[in-house]
Image 1 (cartoon, rainbow, N blue to C red):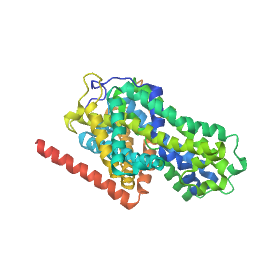
Image 2: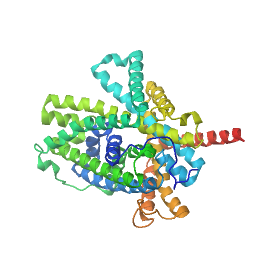
Image 3: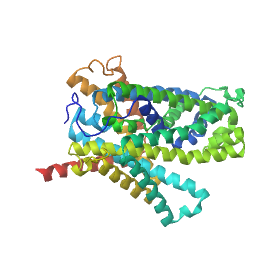
Image 4: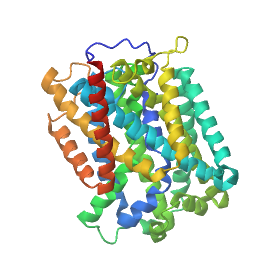
Length: 435
């Protein structure tokens, strides 16, 4: 296990600053789900949907604070995996690494790749055929792999560009939509019950997932003690403003009809605000959003594999660094291949279920890592981020994530449990062979 007080010499380049990290957080969270989210939340809470946004934002902020404290103390690559491994050792770290890079990142990327191709196939039906579909997915992933192997700066530039391109139509919709909303549609005639608010908040929590992936490149973040907390804060604030703005405009433009439009509500809003071309603009934005998510994860996901390989939890070949570009090129190629294999299978529902449950378990482990590191190594040192109010925020975060895990359907819980069980077996067999 690495000493968290010494920055491990991994051979990587620290090139990611606060602004780039904040944009990465926004990129990884604002995905395809935002285009359906306003209608889904309105179906649960009506015009009171804004309440769920506020509750969910506070919840995510608590979890982010836990990531920020551990992230300012553990500066090597791997993000959540590195944090858990540092706190609990190689066994729990191994489980966390598989849950994160495979259970969440790779399978979620495969799922959204399927959605991306299906969306493009509406305009180009040829992509519904097996061979053209496979060629498209292979070419897309090969391009993203090439860019990220060429260097972390190239990967950062790509996801910054993609994030800005993705956000432009959404920000434009918010700004223009504010001038045409009907304020009467924003009134809350009847406050929802606690049960309804809970259901809406649970739904909304999934739309905030993904920021954890932005920290996978922790070994390439400049001055992590300062950059990690500020990057997470800036990203969360930007996400909250965008989400609340979109919900306000959607509710103010469509009114009661918003709750009946749960497939593509923002496309309907854009059509009302801009005309037919606005709806087409948002369809393009869906594809760009998914592409942007993929480009960001091809930057961050392989770093978890890379870090796990350096800790001997995965084959050492996955920990190799390119002699010229100083990037974990083998891990990047391997990660892209895994995404491609599962994307070609097209099993979107299964992939999404496993990804969601896996991430919740990783979040819980990182939250507990805050308490473990404090108990073992003392409070964070000067210059490192410290969560205020002692253990109150980590304990509250544990309770919230635990509650969310209890809300999972039985089939989803069983799927995630099976993945954890497989990790235990693999680790035991590997330890036996080594002995």
